[in-house]
Length: 309
Image (cartoon, rainbow, N blue to C red; front, side, top):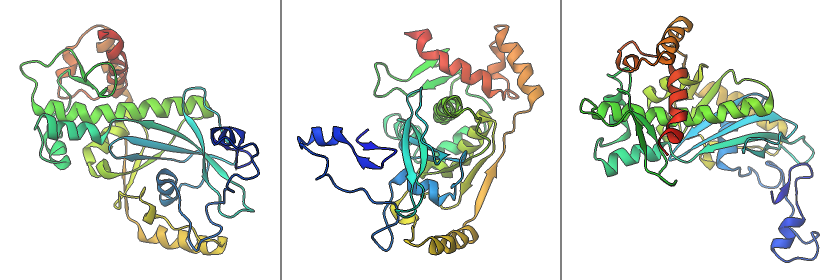
């Protein structure tokens, strides 16, 4: 990292890259709210603050072409052992305590919907993906692994079969974004030593209600979405230089934003039944309209790349 997370200063590595002999001439890093009347923030930090997720343990996910999750770790940075990034979330004034976050990202979310639209001509817009995917309750045994920039194209476990329709492709594409997000949530839980109990979403494809319903089922936790889904944009958050002004802004934005909450629909008894069927080698459950177990589907999705390479 070019910036030391504890001193909040550019380090010697940055000086070496620029071939400076001293760090004294490097730029000074200011807090999130210090010099200007209202300061800028990174897109993902902006979204975290816009969600009013200022307490440790709170997290947000921004779904755009990719996906970016920020988990508030409080006043101590947490160094990941699973490839995630420790970063500064915000610091409201130079004399204030900085707050940190852990960040995980997925490369393909809305990009996969673009692939359905532009490459396969299956949908005309993102909303149509929800329209096609909602009537089917499973993906017909199709697993979509979005590896566009990897060594292999998207992989379909069990194959693209004669009864597979664009509805199944639409649904499995939505699921692929949700499963990648679950990857991040699980390694974050191992790094911080605590399970996430709720999550808020924003971003361009967060307006897809089926996507958020699937995400709630796959994570097993409530998902919140604001009606203003573009909270990661720089103009969406305003950090005042004075703490009292920021408090006023929080109360104002809290009263002015409407939101929806999506709760997991999978029951524990239903999950156990499907797990038994899957572990016994019975694939017919994948084509059952009552099939809702996401834990087993996630396990199978995770094993798809290794099983075909």
